[in-house]
Image (cartoon, rainbow, N blue to C red; front, side, top):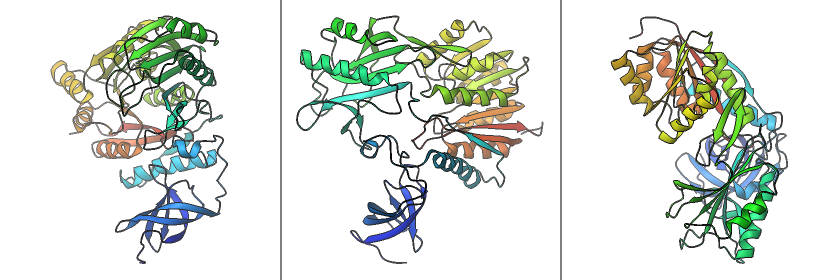
Length: 459
């Protein structure tokens, strides 16, 4: 194997993509990670850093572009870093994400056969995000700038019209910028902790057309707020305007306190036949079109006939719980965030669903407690955990409760594979696996999996 050192030039064909979006290629068995490349590119790159068996190189020239390379629609796709796959044809993006799921399940889960169904892609993989959070700052010439942070930095890349977001975002930002300039309101500076205007949060109900604007400030009040409200109300669909107080030295965007300026303090939207009330602090899936497909698949896999008791673990604001409650006898939801459970209960009332009960707490604590003390059971258990996957105590209780079906919704197929292996070794068989592309142009992919109990005497 050749000895590579900094500033050496290499020629390599990109064969795969890393979890963080770098292209992966090999020379004489040595692995290289090269940013701004796509699978199939033949490139020339400069060595930046090497380890024992891998290294990092900087792209200098694409000597032969991949057949799957396309020109990014967004002029700041490279420096922004939010759309790691925008230079890749969308059909190839879907194939890449499907391979990622399959490879994780076979390598980490140890499964030799994976019953995969075709990934659920988008017909129109743009303008799909119903939520955006834009930081404000000053450029090098002292002009007000708004956009997104460059990858792995807090340097703002100017972008008032992200092509993944709602078209109304641009007009909202234009009016806030004009308000700042008119009344000399300074953007927040992380280094000095001075300046008033931090982030602007914009949400849109895709079904209802309702718009929400919540301006995060480093202070107690928003000067001349009445004038700003009147300006924003000229935008069709404007329903809720508020400001959020965050005076902490932190990179957390929202503070705990919201002051309402106009409207009910929330917007509404629906996924399928279920309505949701969304406040500035609510969690809500950012891609409603794909969420309906994902939850529809979860509901189908649950196989409900009307007589089942279902547990929904890591339930958030009850998005999946309420979907399930339409077809189940009883649904129990568990979530650690108290505010999310308040929203879940309110959403159940909003939809007239009285067969849902919610618990605040860790799934790995609530489920064992309910099983041991109150002898609860489940015909179906649905889990939608964070990236780290399910806690082993939670998986162990699932096995003890022995539901007929487990429906696993995952945002990280690596931890999904690990948890699938645990359940498969304890009496469950993997029946279906399907990807759902919730984040076109980005790296992440959701997966929904059905496991069925194949033996009754699980230990």
